[in-house]
Length: 69
Image (cartoon, rainbow, N blue to C red; front, top):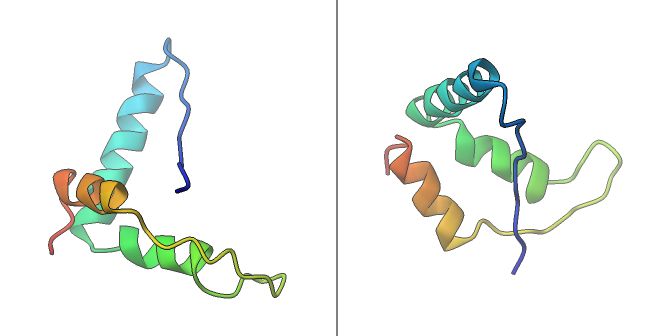
């Protein structure tokens, strides 16, 4: 299993809010899974493939923040 993380500074609530709103917008537009697949499943511009299928936990996170099924 592979974990993916995003690290933000604690003392920057404005940036944290921007990141949260951006993820929510991308979720509502159904872009999160599309972007995940682009960078983690499809061939990269370098020609390499990472081949990291989306985990059930990340799918659930996408759903929780608003990506429709």
